[in-house]
Length: 227
Image 1 (cartoon, rainbow, N blue to C red):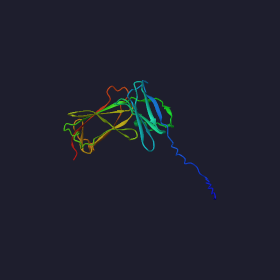
Image 2: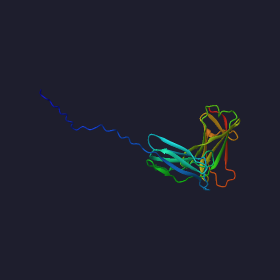
Image 3: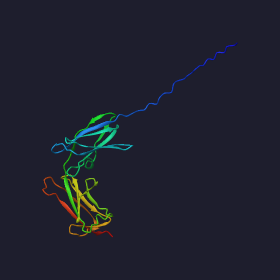
Image 4: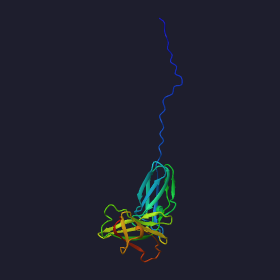
């Protein structure tokens, strides 16, 4: 009987390699918030970190009773950190500064950020009398706020409403010339006495000075629906 021997030759064989997945370790940004004049810590300040580029990403945190905040689980990148005080009395550094500060965060880095100092401001008070209750009609597009040195518009917000109208507020810088603006496309506006505003708009320069016992307040009227 003839014997047949079979020989198998494996040439250039290698086992399949497993794909390597790169995992970015998240980092964090910690810091504190304080009054720029007194240096006292500010609690309840909303701190936001926004990453540049795509995909968009933002993290939010509130400072505690000692003024400390922590923004965890941040992927590496360049962030803009802003602070907003709830209510009125302090300026938003990112809103009123021409160049917001940016932070470069590396993967896995626990970054200790410098204290964010919020500057006290003056609270602008604007009353809009509305005897016809047109502000709440739903068709109003009242533009009310101030324009700063670079013509950026800062809208005032409604602080209170009643049967006679609405009161608006906005924190503005002290000793800084700004322009009050009010206009509407659907409401006919007047001054405090009810006299119609020329062109249904007003742009008036003013400033609140440090030490003013009673900062300037403004009153307007809604005198009808625009034709």
